[in-house]
Length: 476
Image (cartoon, rainbow, N blue to C red; front, side):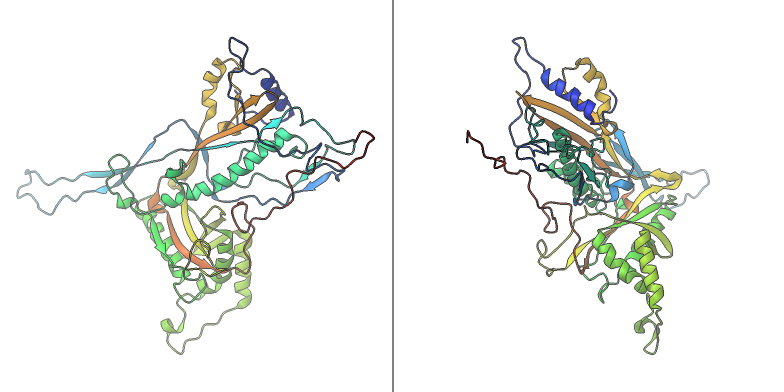
């Protein structure tokens, strides 16, 4: 079965499938009915776009963005993969034989394995009443509205084959894109914060860590530990811990590992929240170019001359180009809103207006451009043989090269869509990854958030308008 883009022809096919649901020997439906819930009507009575609108509708929806768009996405059908690492060799000892033909001491190679876990994500649409989606309030209820802007597509975590162009006019499109929006939101956070306890795939926060163990025996593998540092809630540009010293040591430590292990050249990216990047880039040029040039290092009579214009130009170049120089090496900077953020709400050590988060160095590829951080998904295309064997009795299909599986259920004239995806993020070289936790920053203004549970999320408006248009008639 090929990928199915959700366009009008597909919707017609799906609606026909609704009408031809599998029935048992008595002619009764064999599928579980969809529970009733109110979808968002687009046109007709109660429709949010009813009322003679101008054709162009502009979006103010904030999309998530982050590291996922930089990671390869590969298909798999393996549930419990094992990844091997040569961790070292035991010592042979210092005792030497007396004679050349006597046995000498021998040594052993040592290895460690890692594994990865898939996490399932499920979401449903609201129930759609097939008899109501075609209704229009009157001739002024236009269905040629055009969306200006995009509501999906910044993270590579959303079902991109859903049709955004018609979400203002076709209810089925609107419901499926709403599912896609919330899928993108959830997976953006899970990429970092995913928890096995919540049936999610383990996120990078739990993989860029110390305490690595062999997947099969549980034996400690410290050679594979990440470099994790604590900035202890000091300000990124303050007089406490020095962010240049911490980032420089993190980079030096990881690059040394890569060179000594024969894995260089490595492609790293530096990842952090956008608000933290804005504050770090404001202080980095001056701090980096004058690092260890203070009185304590050069003597009480030392003087450092700073060119403000050069610092501002470097800051602007960093921000516009999304890069940072560390130890003379240039790294791409990726901002990600899925990274956890401390505030005075969840951390009593912070004051209102203060925030804290982590800065990561993530290896994308090692020598030979071999990928070491990537995403995998259960490839639902591999079920084509069994789906075809069912001869059309299963109302299931997939989009996005098999990343997302969709299903449909019906209760009389009502139907709803169901989405499922099983994904994971894999870090093969945790020993080349690191992070600096608890870096405090105090922005002048916090950015808007794509997540509904954030105090910085803004939406507004209505999902349902009054059904009664307020007309008068002799029969009223």
